[in-house]
Length: 113
Length: 111
Figure (cartoon, rainbow over the protein chains, first blue to last red):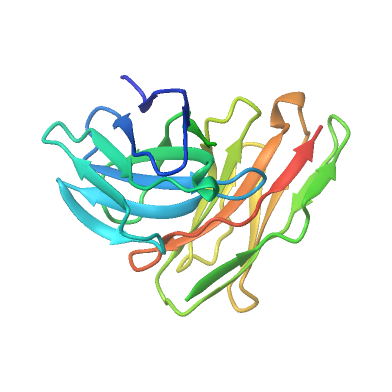
């Protein structure tokens, strides 16, 4: 059974650019959630995708958007990058959109200069 | 709204000793779950233990147990016989269908 994977591991962008982060969910999982974790903080919920539809969103602006594909992998897109977007972005998959254990990927470290 | 407070930013414990990490939360939901997640220095977050709010019995998972006080909205994690591999950030995360996962700011535990 393959766990949750994320790519790339690290990324450096400049302010104003756009970025796409990718996540492959664990086999059999149809739900993917994305989190932003600033240094020294807990993860902040960005949004969740369930069977290719957005199923809940945290307090993040519309320039944070996502997609989920038929194989349940997912992308997180961030437009017009700001310095405060520098963080670890975590993807987590779960068996369902209800309350269930989330399996986290190793994260993508984004640095915005 | 739903909020989580972990009041201990850092803690230390000797090997084989017991340590308790505290978590308090506030929620307007009646049906929810509580999770403790561990994030070792290598970053990948893993589940430590979960508790269903409707269950009065405290959850136990090997050396890990919780003290769940629903009325006080308190959900502490006890780690017995601490091991070097327990060194990590620990996050408390109450969750419900409405509020998804709300993580606390974490407690850094050093063994």
